[in-house]
Image (cartoon, rainbow, N blue to C red):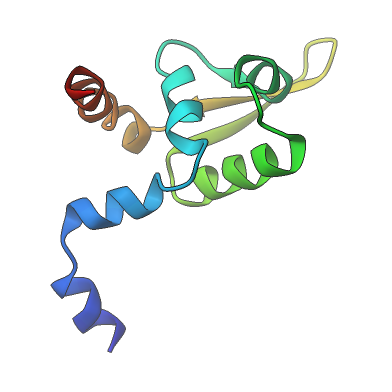
Length: 100
């Protein structure tokens, strides 16, 4: 049944579900030009809290949009980079920005 449902689903619908939620598109947008860090995202996105950010980053990572990298420089930190799949979203999201 899952295979049948997936074939009937529009590919754009899958993308919209992937980026649904209040913060995911903003998080992805901030990663267009450079890797992002957790605390930097918290500072840049007004109203975002730690728990919500953590969940959103995990979902984006699980869906192949972000790669998580532990940087061993002091201080030790984690960076989130757009994966190839995530980079493919850049022109799509930029086009949507033009429409708004």
